[in-house]
Image 1 (cartoon, helix red, strand yellow):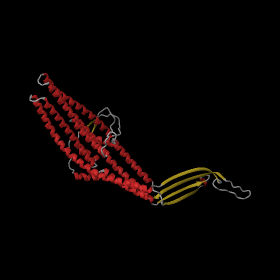
Image 2 (cartoon, one colour):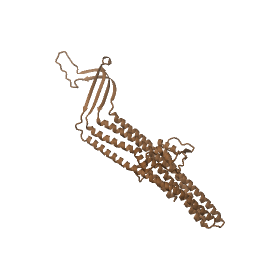
Image 3 (spheres, rainbow, N blue to C red):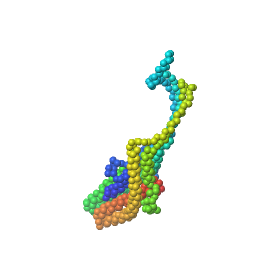
Image 4 (tube, rainbow, N blue to C red):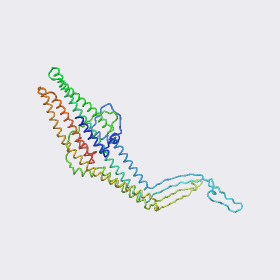
Length: 473
């Protein structure tokens, strides 16, 4: 039963992470691991045990989680794309100073100098002679509607990447909070199973004494021994799972490899109030950064399509140079300049523009479809979070009551056994009921707190409000 409860909690954990981080469940979790489950380990492990609060775990994860790091770099890359698009609209200014020695073959250039004047000879080789030239060059696209639209599209894409970064930070908080809560749940399970081991040990020692005195049969002693070893096996498994999940938490937040730590925030049960489903849905549609990002991506795709259509429009550019040239040096120089204004009118560009328009329109339709899908996804996530909160809150209340009933049953079974009116089978069964009730309470509390942080992420406010939702100061 303990194993089934444990598998149930792990299934909830993986389901939330796979669905949230990867978009849809993946059959091969090990091969399709999300970057939000990794990090950039920073620092050196110390010999002391680190006291780790939930706030500190969030702070570390937002700095060192691999998903956050990659998202931040993606935002920088989007900024670079916008700068590159802007460069097409900016002037290019450069300067150059040259000193050259030249010799020219006029005949090779097509000059055939044959003048029938006796005694006059004009050479076909001119030079060598020196030339000094200092010159500034200026060029700019004065008007290109396609470049203007591409720059605006890149600006919207950069804005979308900024909101994607905010959304990814919410996912980092969700992942970290889930891992932190799982370790808390594991620690509670270890404490619960350890208490059951102690109870089973007491029962076994008592039965051993009574068996030696001939008061109980050997089968009762064997039953008590089996129960003790069963609880010991559960304790070994629970302690191992706690250690494994602590490693996973350390990976998420980027702790130094091998760093020992202890959690300081127990995150007990705290009811979530003052929010209705309709308020949550309205808030999610207005504050979800991934939704704002998707809207910006649609606008960027629309501008890209307009830029593709504008490739058929005329464009105006200029090219100018001004400098000082002389031979053999600047002592005999004189300024020279050239100014050109070019109007480019596309007449026939093959199928390139049509292909660009078709590709841009296909991308636009994809972005629109993704935006519509995200609207439904937001509605589904918020409603699911509310359903999970309501059911898990009820489960917490029922399981807490069940613990009291199971403990009363165990007390009565122990009293009946001591009075000699029942064998230890009732005691063993009551112990199993207590263990099951404790694990049910731990699992329901974990699910309820996970539901609260999932709701914060569904509303797009996980980074700002996760601690408040969990009741951690």
